[in-house]
Amino acid sequence: MTTTTAITNIGSLVTNDPALGDGTALGRIENATVVIDGDRVAWVGPAANAPAADTAFNANGRAVIPGFVDSHSHLVFAGDRTAEFNARMSGSSYAAGGIRTTVAATRAATDAELEANLLRHLDEARRQGTTTFETKSGYGLTVADEARALRIAAAHTEEVTYLGAHIVSPDYADDPAGYVDLVTGEMLEACAPYARWVDVFCEKGAFDGEQARAVLTAGAAAGLIPRVHANQLSHGPGVQLAVELHAASADHCTHLTDADVDALAQAADTTVATLLPGAEFSTRAQWPDARRLIDAGATVALSTDCNPGSSYTSSMPFCIALAVRDMRMTPDEALWSATAGGARALRRDDIGRITPGARADLAVLDAPSHVHLAYRPGVPLVSAVWQKGVRAH
Image 1 (tube, rainbow, N blue to C red):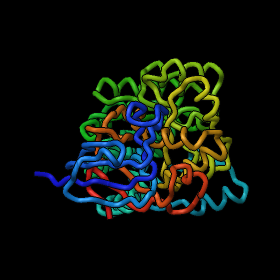
Image 2 (image 1 turned 180 degrees about the vertical axis):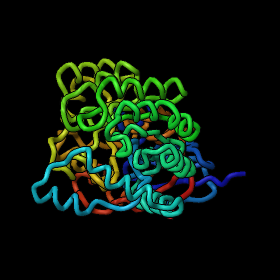
Image 3 (image 1 turned 135 degrees about the horizontal axis):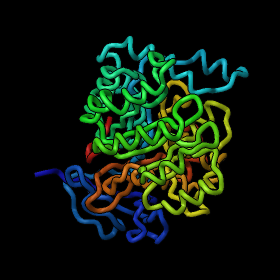
């Protein structure tokens, strides 16, 4: 038999289930209790109606939210790019080519070094409330290095993405078509067993629309679900391609035409617009306009894009604060996008919410309301985390 745990005396509970709470998207319940049984939520509701449980955790009037769902990260890498960041903050511009520095360091690292670095970042993210994460390959760019990156990642998350098409490998600098053939052939065959998703960086300096289409359609034929790095550095075909191919997400979405926004709104049930404000913060680039997307009816997720070059943060609370301050999201919208929105981007209904039957992933904030995530930026507000029903330490 499993042991049940009641989290009691919750001042403000965000369930992301309108039917359970106040009818808003966040489904808030005041003075609430959550009961966990094994790795699942067993009961949610007003404290006065709570059933008995074997053990209890007193939230002491603090807020409880779903664990963050980080649906876009690049955590299998070695080295860092401090010098590049320093140069950029001193006046240099960001371009896709900086990835080559990480490729060299990653190729030179051992499996043990890559896994240790991955685990360090996962622990860092968990302490800030992240309970589900997606991560990608993309820093090996050889058959063997891409496959080992995915194998290492798959030991720690079910949300693994094949990104052999991050940039054209330096080994194929004079033969990009040959590299696309490799990514869609031998490399895909070696990597598909470890991955759920296929991704491509559709951008100037990386892969054009037709190359991206070839990568995504080959991945889909191998059983992988598309997602796209789209419209980050410039206007381009990435968003339209994501919608056309029913990709789970179009990620970045910084430079959008009205047609792009309309396409994402029309595909709101299929393709999520995942916004990554850490990248704009770290590159001093134009902010994505979340307000424009939300008002048009698109589904929006927030994620960290944690990577050593353009967004070296694992903090979802930090990204929430940026989204509220600089992307015109309300605190409610930002929290929903960082939890339920991320779950939608991963096509999951068992995470990103606190409702009976969902996975017991939640965070206790050292604050009376989730609004403090944006109201008190940079303050470590996450005081306790449950992941799959187990309290993390």
